[in-house]
Image 1: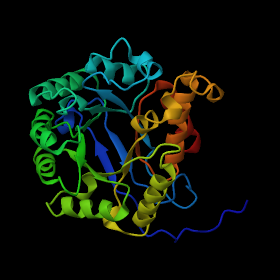
Image 2: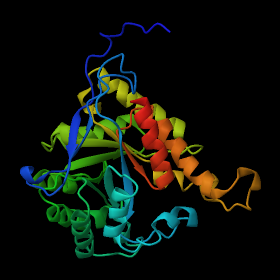
Image 3: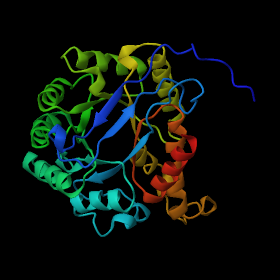
Image 4: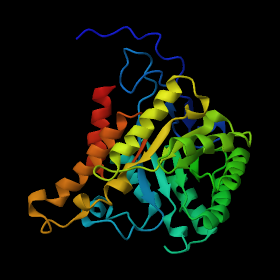
Length: 319
């Protein structure tokens, strides 16, 4: 096939963002992760610089998830009650590029843990692993505004990626990340206009554009994947054509959404023709992740080790 000459097609690209800080930068991470930098359609490197490889952040919860199936729990059965050891296993055994700590336990309806509990968990994970850390709140505005500033201060100097902030709740965490030197995740409900607006609002607080990562609510295979894909594709095209408020790297939450689907979590006897859940669940997560890679995802949150291994192999082959 003849490759067309499109060298002059794209006028701009995606911002580069580095997560984590090593000792010489005031942190304690053994390595940093840089994402973004693409100046072409995903994996179309004949168009321009493809930027940095997409990376995988494995989820670790501050409290054992009560909605995980046995298939998903089994790889972490020995560490699921210890977030620090859970994170260590994800890095050392399963090859996670980053750890995403989900502070589910601080939610008023899921344990209502205190800010002190959250700080203790963050410090234990920072001590256990040397990779950069994403810290994801419980998505309850009042509780996040109470807890996340203290978590941010506890991780000061580590250049973590904190989130999420929305159009209706962004001022507290934005100011905190600005003060403590962290990067931030801006969230929109699969809406490119709202996605752009929250980036504008955050930047108007003098938050640097090269420390923002965008998050569009992720749809899993069969549950809105096409819509999520189309929005993220439009964001990437906007970045390549010079829209500075759409030029941020993108994170997606594949693990949580994929394993919410009935196809991934149903028992083997519910629909026998679907096959065993131990195969079906990881496949559902893998297909969701590899599909969204094509839309321009830079950081993928994932759960099952087998899915992680498959997606990492896919990234290496495509890159």
